[in-house]
Length: 103
Image 1: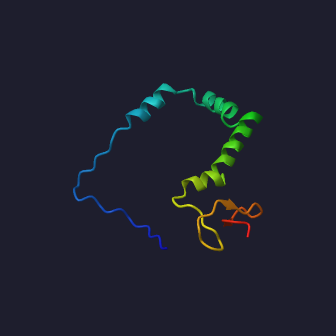
Image 2: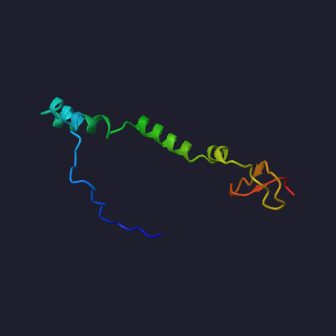
Image 3: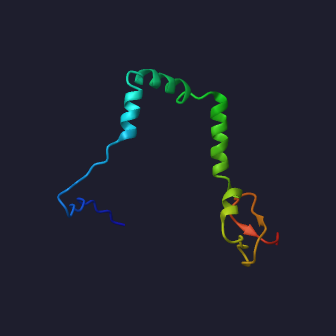
């Protein structure tokens, strides 16, 4: 792969318009002088999670990478590594290989 960074193509006309950031201006005016209090609030409530919140987040991450969930998204059924027919059983040791019968 190759990534090339180039200058943007110049506009075809000499007129360049900028959109006025109305929402940004409103946020700045509404919260003027409150930034330090907002930062302290976020440190306390957002960046300092409780032990229960950390456990819940860890559980969500574990569910995200669940093999059963990933397989449900797979478009086709797994196949036996030996004969190639559809398999319903997975190796309990490596959890990677599928098989149709113990033999």
